[in-house]
Length: 290
Ligand SMILES: Nc1ncnc2c1ncn2[C@@H]1O[C@H](COP(=O)(O)OP(=O)(O)OP(=O)(O)O)[C@@H](O)[C@H]1O
Ligand SMILES: [Mg+2]
Image (tube, rainbow, N blue to C red; front, top):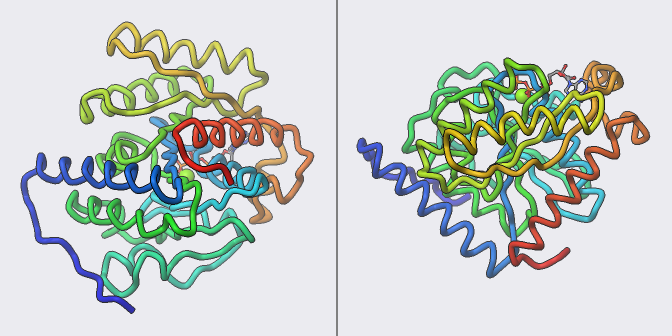
């Protein structure tokens, strides 16, 4: 095993941010030339809007399309992607941060084309890693590109700076909300923080979960889009939606991702459509097709 070399400590926040942005450039540059790995961060303002469910089922839908997908459980310290897959991996990102393992050592296969990187549950030291360590983790993500076409980052809710940095480092950010006014307002809060932190360099799109139909999603999305246009002077695209599906809770209780539990459930076509859009995004950014 290669020794894990942590970077020197740098206190200056601006230096750390520059490092994250340059890691992102390195990731983008090599991705376009080599394997075409694209990273998709899933964010929300309010908790419990369905980020982990989206990450898992989107991952399955993209793997079904022949893409090699890795889901990074970036809800560090309170991770649960492993539970949604009903698996108990021995190692998690905590082992990488402590220098016991390389990132590639802890990749855990949950299907032919699908792997997860467990985040570690109930580990307080992980829920608040410093900027320097986070920049280092983001840098290490490029080591996944030989095995991965799409890297999905499932994050924790809210304005935590770790989450914002993961979003800034990603190729695409899916900002997830439900149609509830509280969730919509918190989504705008995240968007605002992202733009303040990154200086508008974030590729964010809106996804609305738990809707009755697409019309309800478009109306909810429009509220965030018009607010962002008015106050941030940016145009955020609407990306898609997932309908409320009673089968979801059943699947979670059985520790099986919904698309495996019931591939014909009412939300399945919505996950598949989002997966197609991400594949289009990937192809549109100059990567090779699978
Ligand atoms: N489309 C849906 N229809 C019905 N229930 C859903 C849907 N999406 C998610 N859920 C349910 O909502 C709850 C929260 O989902 P999930 O854990 O994915 O949210 P989260 O945003 O990851 O939460 P957290 O912020 O705590 O990480 C779960 O009980 C899940 O089963
Ligand atoms: Mg979650």
